[in-house]
Image (cartoon, rainbow, N blue to C red):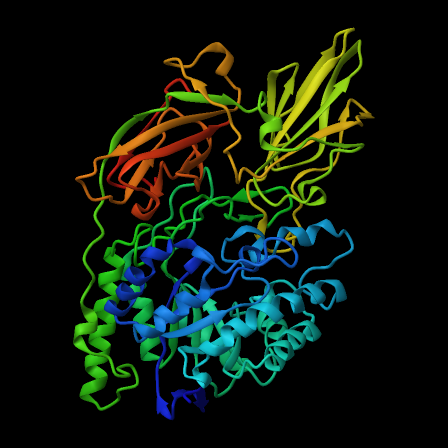
Length: 606
């Protein structure tokens, strides 16, 4: 069967020269109903390969509990790509980065204080082995050596930017080989000395990741790999956004120029991203290069890539398509057909555009107060200390800590050691302030009357760090809470992963915001009615007048919104909707004066 190999600096597939033109599409960021549409557009742009990561945390949400269904059906995605005539590159390492929650590592790893991540720690490797015992046999039938489309797999991801445990990389490589993975194995790192030294595995292909500076990047790779094929495994043609920052964009002409440089150098390339998609639910990651500069990533993963978040071709798509088409024609004229690889002109045809609709305003006619219904969402648990989420068996969402302070007491500052990532502090039901990770200027202080005070701290996990030295990122309250210098004990904890809202009891909502709803977390519910005679279409949810929270459509978590932007809409793919009534639930943390949402036909990413 066909195997991807190389002779000198030339990739060979089934004995024939090939130049890989690949684009990243993450199956876990796109609803399955749209996988074929995105893959067809990849082909239409001129690509012959699709690349995807495999997120461990989505496939093993709890130890020994596995999920390979719906958006996690990686096997179906690979099979579909192969059926469409595309090669597939899989990156199934335990860690993926990808601006994905915890870099793809499962949160339950953090319940063990002694476990060390991404090294030859025996406990960590035992978890990896159990996961690989399930994952790799699922991937093996799709290897090109077994007649499938998968031509290459990654050993670990950008390891040189994290550590230098060569034994760890060898262990992962050996684990793949022992489980029958016999396609080309590779690593990818930044084009620097320390990264290539620590991230490469002797005897296996090293690739580099960059967004510009082609000549310099490949020259650095050549210092460590003299003859093997040149490949940019991540060509950063766009970039991701953090909350509170401007939306990142990059000129299409600049992207096209860098691509031409790589093609003229005879290099292969993987566009990161070809189509970004969406961080649905609570799966967005965060960055923290300096210890106190925590930056969570937004819900949209549009990435300013070749296809927009909702799959529409952008100017960058057509610029890249033109470069590939011109380069292919010039090579055919000189009988250098490495890039053609059986490509046909009809492959350039785009599928029918996916239509959008502006469904208009939806009134949120009902509401439910969070603190009145904590017991409907979670079983209360008693702990001496305010334990972090992972110690409570919780992965994502929110967590509530409640205790009673005896009185009287003089005014003292409330100190949370430390909050991860954003805490609303309530005393006797009144919001006194918000404590945000890394914001040392925000403080909360209060005195306690003789009858004592009820303290409640609602903490939001805004995404675990996905890259860099502070990867170990437990959520909630990680150490303790003090009033002044005195630690507070005896806590009632409610874990609020927000996966099942069926236990909520809603009441009719009055028009406008009443005093009791100001700065109080509420669930708001409304119904979007789509006429039976109309086709259900993609749409974009605007939340003008809302502050911060999460939106559910027919029980599906669309992700977070936050008025600080940059994004001002949430993407709602048509497959999440249905003809007739559609349930819309908004969990708003701070209250709203306008309990209505708007469905528009265009995105607003800032």
